[in-house]
Length: 130
Image (cartoon, rainbow, N blue to C red; front, side, top):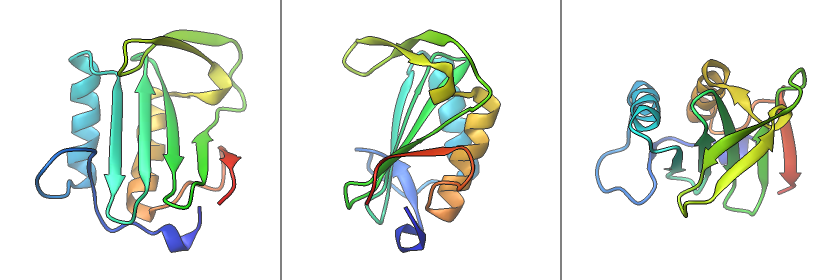
């Protein structure tokens, strides 16, 4: 996902209303996790979809482009696996910790994506090239 994917605005997928600021999205993600909503999907006005699934300690951060490209944030130093990732359909998943980020790091990556409209070059795995 490169500069052609630059996003100018983001909102909660399926929600009506104005685009959200980066600080509003950061607060939204924190509030949703605290309330038990462990899956959040954000959409940009350019067709990007940012999928986040958390177990409250770690977060799977996935970015999908309108062109079918997809990737996710990685933590090369992490070892082991963690469970408790509750999907919207009620399924509980377990992921390798390498494929998730600690919550503070995930929020930083999400901010980067929201501002730049692209995945960071470091700490990112391309799952499906665009």
